[in-house]
Length: 200
Image 1 (tube, rainbow, N blue to C red):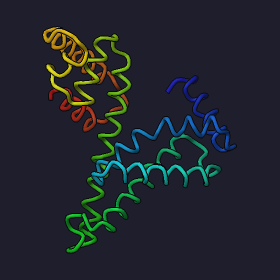
Image 2 (image 1 turned 45 degrees about the horizontal axis):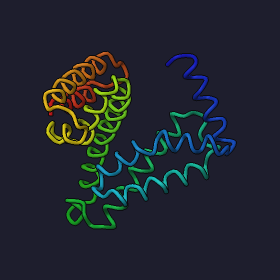
Image 3 (image 1 turned 30 degrees about the horizontal axis):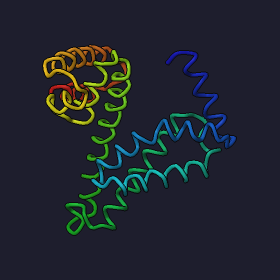
């Protein structure tokens, strides 16, 4: 982490602790999408995931003085989302082992949550790297990797030649792979998952 980044994080968490509206909004924008992605993987329900995440932010805002660092706030939000997701699954009686073994079910859920967290971290990195791509390349890769669209669909949506879509996708994927391999923040499982995503 650079000195400037560390300073910006300290300034942000300080403003958050003081309840400044701009800081609250910035924190929300920073973590809302990854938290929703994380929670939805655990419960397979988009609307319920958004409700859970909203509640997590409300709880965090109510305890804003308890988070001296951005890392501690992030850890609280993801832990709160994981616990709320488990409670949701219990209430919905949707967990595979809920009627047989709560203990075994909780253990399996923990593994699911860890995998979901890795995927969430990976997607954050991928989203960030996609934004750094050249404009035309960025459009194609976003539609392909993030939205899962086929080359023909992308060509029609962007009014672009099919071969151009293939060329731009290949270029973008190559640039993304290089960027991911250079990223020191990704764990080995995270890197493996990221490279797998780009092969699809």
